[in-house]
Length: 136
Ligand code: THU
Image (tube, helix red, strand yellow):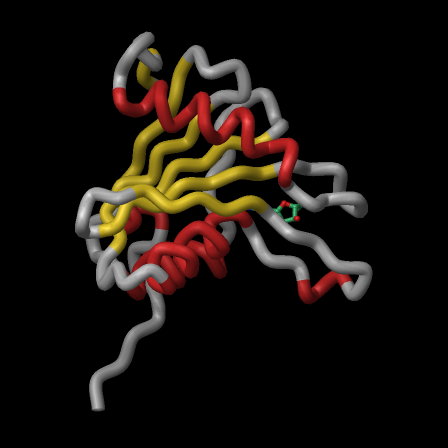
């Protein structure tokens, strides 16, 4: 666990995610998540979780942020930031880990505590050591 320093680049992203939590559409779980994906260009893209009354159609904040980045022309993802309404940092779900792996073998995942006092940082390799891949 690392301390989140005032005025650091990560603090700027934390502040943005904190304000984005209100855009999360989570009437069923009441669990709000906001995420940012840094593309290879250095630009940052944002997303929130969007639920549906047909539950399985729900999409996580991380995938929305990553798909936003790819839609804007990014080819790789270098960092994924996550903030939720839970007090402690949350890790990305298995499906999102597989999607992150698609665009990077060594992306950093930065997971903030809700109060922004600290964060955890892990590589995607560590979170998904043996993800699905194939060669034709
Ligand atoms: N969720 C995310 O957006 N990201 C995660 O890493 C875990 C789960 C969402 C999906 C659903 O809307 C809610 O959180 C509860 O599972």
